[in-house]
Length: 134
Image (cartoon, rainbow, N blue to C red; front, side, top):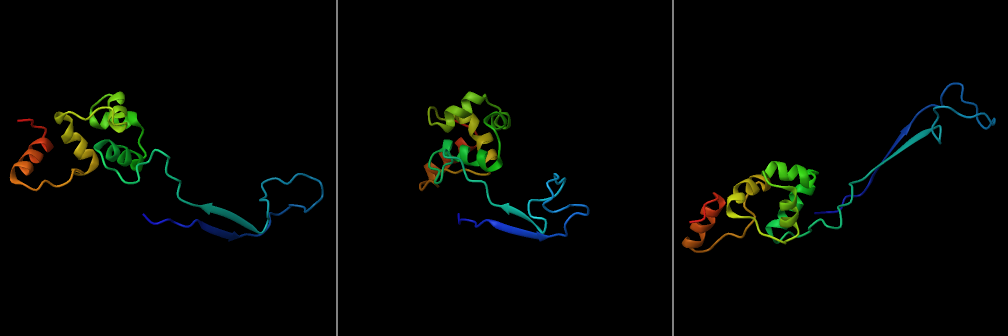
């Protein structure tokens, strides 16, 4: 991902009617600089725990969840599991059982695992993607 530079947007406006400069009376509804408004916009920085290069299924789950702006509770509801289960997957404490792989792959938008080379490995990967163990 490339870095984005902040956008600075200047808008020129006329001073408000009735605003008296430097008289000691408080100014109401007047910008700090009466001739321009400054709006800075930049992309929000990613959290420290954001996986830059996801390697495990838990890293992929965390990256997708943070990209969508979801809490673990909301992701758990979409996956049909408990919040602690999502936490354990993201922290590599446990691996998802085969029956949870189909909803995980739907949530991720595909299977992030490396492509298998042999026919037997491809068959096994296809079966686990469907949630089948044997």
